Image (cartoon, rainbow, N blue to C red; front, side, top):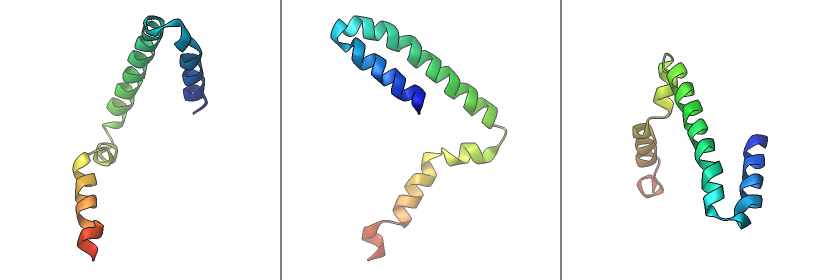
Length: 72
């Protein structure tokens, strides 16, 4: 969380310098972010519970079975 706050503060402080500079900074940061996410998913893929937790089918099933419309 602190790293996220620092990144946002840097982005907002650079905002006045133009979108080109922000894009030049933000592109590599986002690339690193996606590499870290990929590493976490691949390391957690041995635990099937991790992949099940991010499966959107379970979210849809939950919303369908716990809908306010269906409970009344």
